[in-house]
Image 1 (cartoon, rainbow, N blue to C red):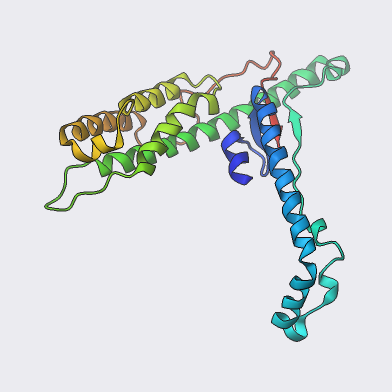
Image 2 (cartoon, rainbow, N blue to C red):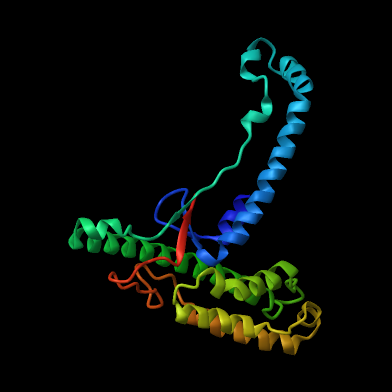
Length: 242
């Protein structure tokens, strides 16, 4: 469940809260609903085994055992909940005062840009790591030692590149271009080809290293690819999910 939450959303500036694109809410809601149903089913199984659980705990904990630590309904200890908060400024605030409305718009924009920068840094860091991993596996052997090319390295890079624009999608064109170039470097490349064809390995590795050079070292502060949100325009393309 946590993996779904993190994969479907982007980091936000508040702990326990992440950004979710509005066009992804329906799919996210459906998947979380499935997880909630499965958790409920498993909780019922726990409750059905309550007697066995208590008997085992009584033996294992000895004098420290306390029946009061085990509620009559163990399934009540399990639950899954999430909520949404749309990133818009209430129109009612405009009626209160234009200055207050503009200030709130600016605050929302600043927080959104902060989240965008966090997402950019995280995804560029992940992409750099995947590029380093695969290019390292494709490196010429040292002596008789050859590093194996793993499915995880190839498919991990392929998956990130294919979902990069959809996951970020905040106008970071430069970053999307880098991810697209990385995806093109391994497009149509078969795993067995990389394992057996040394010329092909060298060609792919050269392309990956070129993409990696574009990323360079991690940069502190705002990146050039960060999206900008005019404070006078409504911010409504994302929702907060916690």
